[in-house]
View: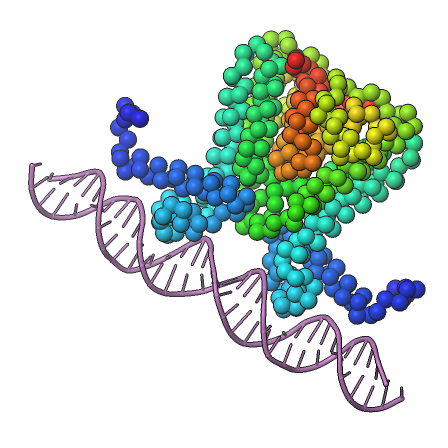
Length: 240
Length: 240
DNA sequence: TGTACATCAGTGAACGCGCGTTCACTGATGTAC
DNA sequence: TGTACATCAGTGAACGCGCGTTCACTGATGTAC
């Protein structure tokens, strides 16, 4: 790495690096132990430091957790976003498969980070303000909605296989996702929510081992079939 | 309560009652604290006993957890089963709605028990043998499969909206659910798995608050629409 | 360039706490004759 | 029916442990003149 143009003081860089190391080691421990309940003392030990040193970087354990959760959001969003953009921007079927697969594989690869975001809360940790939880929903959905919007704009989004949109859902779309107003039909908005929840279901079951009784091949086949089915019912171009 | 005909020794009954009380208080604490990580000492305190007394009933903390998890399976299975049987046995659309709604509502009512079964493992608790996890899948599915089988037997199960069944899924159906062989077409077996995972997705998202940003009405509407859509695509009679 | 001071990372000892679990015991409940 | 014994629930004290966090400190890194 060559030094960046903007001169960042050495000490600040060292500090930032240490923060990253703490979080990274915390994640390693979480992965190793299979539990999101990581101990300050263990982190310090793994870094060959003493526990009090960590207080230079995080006011307390909760602050570290908040950082880990935020990072998990970012990582999932980044991974899914990259997957989407790795496919030609006119190939909406391909992009949908890419998004869904990235979501699934991230959860399988990082089940602990996944449950940090989407699971039950960590023992003893109270999410500040309910913020992050809501944020998880927003970011996960924003990856999907970009896909749906792009498809809609190019006229590649058929009418989904649903009857009519309930007034409460209409109001909800307006209130909470006004930016989609006029771009994405209400039926498509609802279909998108349904797509997300279906995708999430398979992802959860698999990530926590509840589909282990099927072989890996069967799981893959089921996933592919679900992804295809979701495309069909939501009005996205159908893969294959 | 009048004494039962079969003479169960008083002490044994008292013992069984205490075991039930321990588990019930443990659940109360889990619900109150919002965490599955319940302490032996807290349970004893709530029962106005001393912690060592609990060792008369459970060899250690893990044994209590195993019991709680087993109970959670049973409770979910029972609730879903009752819901199914509360609807006329020829009304398959109604039965499907009942099953799905019961699943959803149980998770919403008992998010901690739900995550005991379907979430990431409890800190410090190692599930014996991987048994329970697999068991969760089996029992949840058995409630669904009874519905699908009944519909199939009466010729009320249309062909689902999927292309063809992957050989790996065919093999999996034979191996793991041979009892369905000849009763439930492979397409329907696959569709049933898909139905479960979709249902599970909505349920998880809602139970852990990731759909709180919609109003309750909108969530209900989305759920109803999903349940209907699943019926449509799996070949079950469609509700409404 | 060199010196004097300020800033900050990290240490080591300590505090208070609560946990799961063990052990020897007391006292009540049930059983056998 | 009464007595002698066995069984079992629950207690209270103790053990060992590891946690999060605080505090006064040392020593290195950076800054100002």
